[in-house]
Length: 316
Image (cartoon, rainbow, N blue to C red; front, side, top):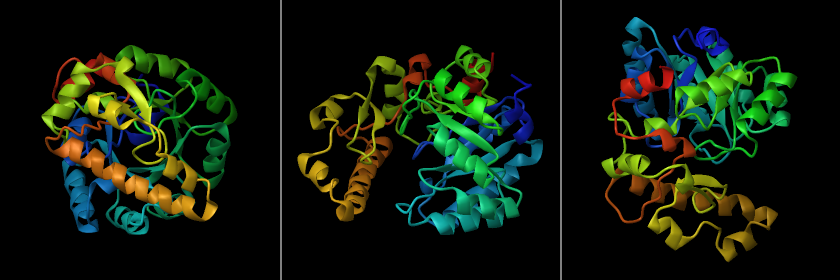
Protein backbone atom coordinates (compact mmCIF):
# COMPACT_ATOMS: atom_id res chain seq x y z
CA UNK A 1 0.00 0.00 0.00
CA UNK A 2 2.78 2.43 0.92
CA UNK A 3 4.44 2.01 -2.49
CA UNK A 4 1.38 3.32 -4.33
CA UNK A 5 2.14 6.62 -6.10
CA UNK A 6 -0.68 8.57 -4.46
CA UNK A 7 1.14 8.34 -1.11
CA UNK A 8 4.21 9.96 -2.66
CA UNK A 9 2.22 12.46 -4.69
CA UNK A 10 0.48 13.85 -1.60
CA UNK A 11 3.16 12.98 0.97
CA UNK A 12 0.79 10.84 3.04
CA UNK A 13 1.26 7.52 4.82
CA UNK A 14 -1.52 5.61 3.06
CA UNK A 15 -2.73 6.11 -0.57
CA UNK A 16 -6.25 7.04 0.46
CA UNK A 17 -8.33 10.17 -0.09
CA UNK A 18 -11.31 10.75 2.18
CA UNK A 19 -13.69 11.56 -0.67
CA UNK A 20 -15.58 14.86 -0.85
CA UNK A 21 -19.24 14.36 0.05
CA UNK A 22 -21.94 16.99 -0.27
CA UNK A 23 -23.13 18.13 3.20
CA UNK A 24 -21.20 15.33 4.93
CA UNK A 25 -17.56 16.41 4.64
CA UNK A 26 -16.19 19.11 6.93
CA UNK A 27 -12.93 20.36 8.43
CA UNK A 28 -13.21 18.16 11.53
CA UNK A 29 -13.29 15.03 9.34
CA UNK A 30 -10.37 16.17 7.20
CA UNK A 31 -8.24 17.12 10.19
CA UNK A 32 -8.72 13.65 11.66
CA UNK A 33 -7.97 12.14 8.26
CA UNK A 34 -4.67 14.05 8.04
CA UNK A 35 -3.73 13.00 11.58
CA UNK A 36 -4.30 9.38 10.58
CA UNK A 37 -2.07 9.45 7.52
CA UNK A 38 -4.52 9.94 4.65
CA UNK A 39 -5.70 12.94 2.65
CA UNK A 40 -9.08 14.62 3.01
CA UNK A 41 -11.25 16.55 0.58
CA UNK A 42 -14.35 18.75 0.96
CA UNK A 43 -16.79 19.97 -1.71
CA UNK A 44 -16.44 23.73 -2.07
CA UNK A 45 -20.23 23.79 -2.34
CA UNK A 46 -20.46 22.76 1.32
CA UNK A 47 -19.77 26.45 2.09
CA UNK A 48 -22.49 28.98 1.43
CA UNK A 49 -20.14 31.92 1.01
CA UNK A 50 -16.61 32.46 -0.26
CA UNK A 51 -15.67 33.87 3.14
CA UNK A 52 -16.76 30.61 4.78
CA UNK A 53 -14.65 28.70 2.26
CA UNK A 54 -11.65 30.90 3.00
CA UNK A 55 -12.01 30.34 6.76
CA UNK A 56 -12.16 26.56 6.24
CA UNK A 57 -8.95 26.58 4.17
CA UNK A 58 -7.13 28.62 6.82
CA UNK A 59 -8.30 26.17 9.52
CA UNK A 60 -7.00 23.18 7.56
CA UNK A 61 -3.66 24.87 6.82
CA UNK A 62 -3.21 25.57 10.53
CA UNK A 63 -3.91 21.88 11.29
CA UNK A 64 -1.09 20.72 9.00
CA UNK A 65 1.60 21.22 11.63
CA UNK A 66 2.29 17.48 11.72
CA UNK A 67 1.90 16.96 8.00
CA UNK A 68 -1.11 15.74 6.08
CA UNK A 69 -2.71 16.73 2.82
CA UNK A 70 -6.07 18.31 2.02
CA UNK A 71 -8.01 19.52 -0.97
CA UNK A 72 -11.34 20.76 -2.24
CA UNK A 73 -13.75 19.46 -4.85
CA UNK A 74 -15.01 21.83 -7.55
CA UNK A 75 -18.04 21.34 -9.78
CA UNK A 76 -16.61 22.86 -12.95
CA UNK A 77 -19.64 23.03 -15.24
CA UNK A 78 -22.01 25.96 -15.82
CA UNK A 79 -24.52 24.77 -13.22
CA UNK A 80 -22.12 25.88 -10.49
CA UNK A 81 -22.49 29.66 -10.53
CA UNK A 82 -19.93 29.95 -7.71
CA UNK A 83 -17.18 28.12 -9.59
CA UNK A 84 -14.95 31.05 -10.59
CA UNK A 85 -15.08 32.61 -7.13
CA UNK A 86 -14.37 29.28 -5.43
CA UNK A 87 -11.40 28.60 -7.70
CA UNK A 88 -10.02 32.07 -7.03
CA UNK A 89 -10.25 31.67 -3.24
CA UNK A 90 -8.73 28.18 -3.31
CA UNK A 91 -5.79 29.37 -5.40
CA UNK A 92 -5.29 32.49 -3.30
CA UNK A 93 -5.23 30.60 -0.01
CA UNK A 94 -3.41 27.50 -1.26
CA UNK A 95 -4.37 23.85 -0.88
CA UNK A 96 -2.61 20.60 -1.76
CA UNK A 97 -4.98 19.43 -4.47
CA UNK A 98 -8.28 20.03 -6.23
CA UNK A 99 -10.66 17.34 -7.47
CA UNK A 100 -12.77 18.44 -10.44
CA UNK A 101 -16.19 16.99 -11.31
CA UNK A 102 -18.87 17.30 -13.99
CA UNK A 103 -17.21 19.40 -16.66
CA UNK A 104 -14.00 20.52 -18.31
CA UNK A 105 -11.12 21.04 -15.86
CA UNK A 106 -9.10 23.18 -18.28
CA UNK A 107 -9.42 26.49 -16.43
CA UNK A 108 -8.92 24.82 -13.04
CA UNK A 109 -5.72 23.07 -14.16
CA UNK A 110 -4.35 26.28 -15.65
CA UNK A 111 -4.97 28.41 -12.55
CA UNK A 112 -4.11 25.74 -9.96
CA UNK A 113 -0.77 24.89 -11.52
CA UNK A 114 0.26 28.54 -11.23
CA UNK A 115 0.11 27.98 -7.47
CA UNK A 116 1.63 24.46 -7.52
CA UNK A 117 -1.73 22.94 -6.62
CA UNK A 118 -2.30 19.44 -8.01
CA UNK A 119 -5.49 18.70 -9.93
CA UNK A 120 -7.19 15.30 -9.99
CA UNK A 121 -10.15 14.84 -12.33
CA UNK A 122 -13.22 12.62 -11.96
CA UNK A 123 -13.72 10.46 -15.06
CA UNK A 124 -15.96 7.52 -15.94
CA UNK A 125 -14.48 6.50 -19.30
CA UNK A 126 -11.29 6.42 -21.35
CA UNK A 127 -12.21 9.29 -23.68
CA UNK A 128 -12.52 11.82 -20.87
CA UNK A 129 -9.50 10.38 -19.05
CA UNK A 130 -7.32 10.98 -22.09
CA UNK A 131 -8.80 14.47 -22.48
CA UNK A 132 -7.95 15.56 -18.92
CA UNK A 133 -4.51 14.01 -19.23
CA UNK A 134 -3.90 16.09 -22.36
CA UNK A 135 -4.95 19.19 -20.41
CA UNK A 136 -2.30 18.52 -17.77
CA UNK A 137 -4.19 16.78 -14.95
CA UNK A 138 -1.93 15.28 -12.26
CA UNK A 139 -4.06 12.18 -11.73
CA UNK A 140 -7.34 10.57 -12.77
CA UNK A 141 -10.13 9.70 -10.33
CA UNK A 142 -11.69 6.61 -11.94
CA UNK A 143 -15.34 6.64 -10.81
CA UNK A 144 -16.72 3.11 -11.14
CA UNK A 145 -20.21 1.62 -10.91
CA UNK A 146 -20.02 1.10 -7.14
CA UNK A 147 -19.38 4.73 -6.27
CA UNK A 148 -21.81 6.65 -4.08
CA UNK A 149 -23.66 9.63 -5.55
CA UNK A 150 -23.01 10.08 -9.28
CA UNK A 151 -21.35 6.86 -10.30
CA UNK A 152 -19.85 5.43 -13.47
CA UNK A 153 -20.99 2.55 -15.65
CA UNK A 154 -17.94 0.25 -15.56
CA UNK A 155 -16.68 -2.05 -12.80
CA UNK A 156 -13.61 -1.01 -10.85
CA UNK A 157 -11.52 -3.74 -12.44
CA UNK A 158 -12.59 -2.95 -16.00
CA UNK A 159 -12.20 0.82 -15.65
CA UNK A 160 -8.87 0.79 -13.80
CA UNK A 161 -7.23 -1.67 -16.19
CA UNK A 162 -8.51 0.27 -19.21
CA UNK A 163 -7.16 3.60 -17.93
CA UNK A 164 -3.85 2.19 -16.70
CA UNK A 165 -3.23 0.63 -20.11
CA UNK A 166 -3.93 3.86 -21.98
CA UNK A 167 -2.89 6.72 -19.69
CA UNK A 168 0.43 7.78 -18.20
CA UNK A 169 -0.70 9.72 -15.13
CA UNK A 170 -1.72 7.88 -11.92
CA UNK A 171 -5.19 6.35 -11.67
CA UNK A 172 -7.05 6.66 -8.36
CA UNK A 173 -10.03 4.36 -7.93
CA UNK A 174 -13.33 5.73 -6.58
CA UNK A 175 -16.16 3.45 -5.54
CA UNK A 176 -16.67 0.08 -3.90
CA UNK A 177 -14.12 0.42 -1.09
CA UNK A 178 -15.33 -0.37 2.42
CA UNK A 179 -12.48 -2.46 3.87
CA UNK A 180 -8.79 -3.20 3.38
CA UNK A 181 -9.51 -6.15 1.08
CA UNK A 182 -11.28 -3.73 -1.28
CA UNK A 183 -8.27 -1.40 -1.26
CA UNK A 184 -5.89 -4.28 -1.99
CA UNK A 185 -8.14 -5.34 -4.86
CA UNK A 186 -8.16 -1.90 -6.49
CA UNK A 187 -4.39 -1.58 -6.13
CA UNK A 188 -3.94 -5.04 -7.67
CA UNK A 189 -5.78 -3.81 -10.79
CA UNK A 190 -3.20 -1.04 -11.18
CA UNK A 191 -4.71 1.86 -9.21
CA UNK A 192 -2.20 4.08 -7.39
CA UNK A 193 -4.64 4.92 -4.62
CA UNK A 194 -8.31 4.98 -3.66
CA UNK A 195 -10.95 7.58 -2.88
CA UNK A 196 -13.27 6.44 -0.08
CA UNK A 197 -16.51 8.22 0.81
CA UNK A 198 -19.55 6.33 2.12
CA UNK A 199 -17.80 4.59 5.08
CA UNK A 200 -17.12 8.06 6.53
CA UNK A 201 -20.78 9.13 6.58
CA UNK A 202 -21.24 7.13 9.80
CA UNK A 203 -18.44 8.97 11.59
CA UNK A 204 -18.70 11.00 14.77
CA UNK A 205 -17.30 14.02 12.96
CA UNK A 206 -19.61 13.93 9.90
CA UNK A 207 -21.86 16.97 9.60
CA UNK A 208 -25.16 15.12 9.21
CA UNK A 209 -27.91 13.83 11.49
CA UNK A 210 -27.59 10.74 13.64
CA UNK A 211 -30.49 9.27 11.64
CA UNK A 212 -28.47 9.50 8.40
CA UNK A 213 -25.42 7.98 10.08
CA UNK A 214 -27.46 5.17 11.63
CA UNK A 215 -29.07 4.44 8.26
CA UNK A 216 -25.60 3.67 6.90
CA UNK A 217 -25.25 1.14 9.73
CA UNK A 218 -28.71 -0.38 9.33
CA UNK A 219 -28.80 -0.64 5.54
CA UNK A 220 -26.40 -2.49 3.22
CA UNK A 221 -25.31 -2.83 -0.39
CA UNK A 222 -28.60 -4.43 -1.43
CA UNK A 223 -30.45 -1.31 -0.27
CA UNK A 224 -28.65 1.10 -2.61
CA UNK A 225 -30.62 2.12 -5.70
CA UNK A 226 -30.36 4.69 -8.50
CA UNK A 227 -32.63 7.71 -8.70
CA UNK A 228 -33.08 10.52 -11.23
CA UNK A 229 -35.06 12.63 -8.76
CA UNK A 230 -32.10 14.56 -7.32
CA UNK A 231 -29.99 16.13 -10.04
CA UNK A 232 -31.54 14.75 -13.20
CA UNK A 233 -28.49 12.52 -13.52
CA UNK A 234 -28.70 9.01 -11.97
CA UNK A 235 -27.51 9.11 -8.36
CA UNK A 236 -27.26 6.41 -5.68
CA UNK A 237 -29.41 6.66 -2.55
CA UNK A 238 -30.57 4.41 0.26
CA UNK A 239 -33.89 2.80 -0.65
CA UNK A 240 -35.96 4.25 2.18
CA UNK A 241 -39.75 4.13 2.37
CA UNK A 242 -39.89 7.75 1.23
CA UNK A 243 -37.70 7.08 -1.83
CA UNK A 244 -39.99 4.18 -2.72
CA UNK A 245 -42.99 6.49 -2.38
CA UNK A 246 -41.73 9.25 -4.68
CA UNK A 247 -40.20 6.88 -7.22
CA UNK A 248 -36.81 7.01 -8.90
CA UNK A 249 -37.66 8.21 -12.40
CA UNK A 250 -38.16 11.71 -13.79
CA UNK A 251 -41.73 12.91 -14.08
CA UNK A 252 -43.28 12.70 -17.56
CA UNK A 253 -43.09 16.46 -17.93
CA UNK A 254 -39.39 16.56 -17.01
CA UNK A 255 -38.72 13.77 -19.47
CA UNK A 256 -40.64 15.64 -22.17
CA UNK A 257 -38.89 18.97 -21.52
CA UNK A 258 -35.47 17.31 -21.44
CA UNK A 259 -35.91 16.46 -25.10
CA UNK A 260 -36.02 20.17 -25.94
CA UNK A 261 -32.45 21.39 -26.50
CA UNK A 262 -33.28 24.96 -25.46
CA UNK A 263 -35.08 23.99 -22.27
CA UNK A 264 -32.96 21.01 -21.18
CA UNK A 265 -30.37 23.11 -19.32
CA UNK A 266 -33.03 24.95 -17.30
CA UNK A 267 -35.01 21.81 -16.52
CA UNK A 268 -31.84 20.17 -15.13
CA UNK A 269 -31.07 23.27 -13.10
CA UNK A 270 -34.54 23.31 -11.52
CA UNK A 271 -34.38 19.55 -10.85
CA UNK A 272 -30.94 20.00 -9.28
CA UNK A 273 -32.24 22.75 -6.97
CA UNK A 274 -35.28 20.71 -5.89
CA UNK A 275 -33.22 17.56 -5.37
CA UNK A 276 -30.48 19.39 -3.48
CA UNK A 277 -33.03 20.88 -1.10
CA UNK A 278 -34.47 17.42 -0.43
CA UNK A 279 -31.02 15.95 0.25
CA UNK A 280 -30.07 18.91 2.46
CA UNK A 281 -33.21 18.61 4.59
CA UNK A 282 -32.77 14.85 5.01
CA UNK A 283 -29.10 15.20 5.98
CA UNK A 284 -29.39 18.11 8.39
CA UNK A 285 -32.68 17.82 10.24
CA UNK A 286 -35.32 15.34 11.31
CA UNK A 287 -37.77 14.66 8.49
CA UNK A 288 -39.78 11.78 7.11
CA UNK A 289 -38.62 12.84 3.62
CA UNK A 290 -35.47 10.75 3.81
CA UNK A 291 -33.31 11.01 0.70
CA UNK A 292 -29.91 9.81 1.91
CA UNK A 293 -27.09 9.58 -0.62
CA UNK A 294 -24.69 6.64 -0.11
CA UNK A 295 -22.86 3.91 -1.99
CA UNK A 296 -22.85 0.11 -1.61
CA UNK A 297 -19.66 0.20 0.47
CA UNK A 298 -21.85 0.94 3.52
CA UNK A 299 -22.13 -2.86 3.57
CA UNK A 300 -19.04 -2.81 5.80
CA UNK A 301 -20.36 -0.08 8.14
CA UNK A 302 -21.39 -1.70 11.42
CA UNK A 303 -21.23 1.20 13.87
CA UNK A 304 -20.88 4.98 14.11
CA UNK A 305 -17.19 5.53 14.87
CA UNK A 306 -14.57 8.29 15.04
CA UNK A 307 -12.84 8.97 11.71
CA UNK A 308 -9.54 7.66 13.06
CA UNK A 309 -11.11 4.27 13.88
CA UNK A 310 -12.67 4.01 10.43
CA UNK A 311 -9.23 4.63 8.91
CA UNK A 312 -7.65 2.03 11.19
CA UNK A 313 -10.19 -0.52 9.94
CA UNK A 314 -9.43 0.42 6.32
CA UNK A 315 -5.68 -0.02 6.58
CA UNK A 316 -5.29 -2.94 8.99
